Length: 589
Image 1: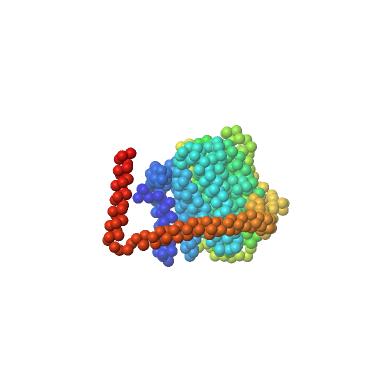
Image 2 (image 1 turned 90 degrees about the vertical axis):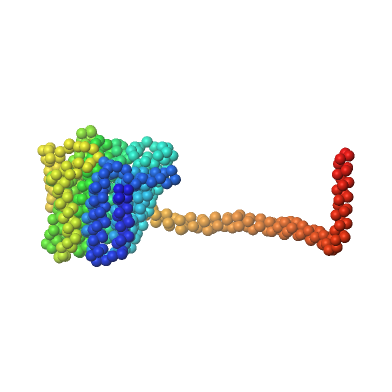
């Protein structure tokens, strides 16, 4: 079985989902992700399942120090997200979710660019399906935008791969760097999926329009697969430092004014990926370890927060901060798990966020990037403000909305409980995570300086939130639409379509079509008339002349064919005499 790619267990396992119902279906939903997880844990590091097609070697499984942490967390999260969605009756949703997760696993295990690109595009399509399966007008529109954006990113990636192959003659996915056009195209292709600034709007635009289970799956894979690709291919590229720090800062302002709490967490997701991108750009073993560790932890705490919000959405049908509040009275366990997730994303000591993020922030300070270090500190305080406080405060406390929903279903609570447990376990005993990172590390987060620094940041964030609330300066939660970078391509697309309809189509009809009729169509008709005349008078004339001559000659031969042997003998004798005379003359000559 070691030659069977792990990602195909999930992808091919989808064939079983629509065949069964009831208990058997639930067993399958648990067994397939668990089998994938066990398989990954038992598979030693190495290269597996390489095939050669048309002189190209495709490597479907490459387990090493970079891919292993991502493979572990992808499999763990797929299992827990599937448990969270056990109530789902829609087979298409579960099939899309597993194909999405399996293709993301295929990306991090790919040993070459062609295999990576194959799973990259499957991931884009299955992600769009997860959005479409929200089955609303908004989800259909958002899913189409999601697909178009990722097709564009895929084209950038493909163009870079082709150019790189022409330059190097190799398709092996290894360190790339940033030296030419091919490298830049690949970087942009990865960066779009990582939600680089101005390329990020697809995250808050598409994710909230999926179903509760779809949102949970979408939160984990696309951006983290891109983080893996950046870590392997572009570690130490200085440009990523500045892109990353901008990513950590600007989403904070959107998250503060956003009313939809899932969209708040989408901006928080971009903020957290910014820390990872910065760590990759710094390029030291500690910062790369920090980026990988933070990706691992982010899937847990961000996924936990989204699970709690999706449980609220499932029970109440509402997700706006203005519509929620007071839910702790009837959803106490969900409230507790949300608080643990909020503490983890904020980096509270003894949670997993505290053992990963400081590796990045500390490296920025030690390497002399003062402004970057300040930006990361500001972003750390900001994430506590909008995700650590705002999410649990407005969802479960704040004013009493009067809503009295039931507690989340048991399977949702179980998934959230395991996620919360892992957040605390890694925070209390970080070697569980540190031992699987790309580089060996002796980093100890539990130093007095780091603990005091983090507590000060948290206290500053809590004080700022409290003072803003009490003073009335905190932006009020209200029903509104916040403009983001997607406004440009939404409006741009409408302007282009209007321009195409009013201008390009009119020019095409009035001028190009008219010119085509006069110059091309009429010219072709004139030429065809001449050719018709030539055909009738020339070709057909010659053909008919030859036919008539052949007919006349055959009539002559017909006269000779009288059927009398004496006539045939006479002709043969005359022929022999002529032949004899010609031979004699030839010899005498």
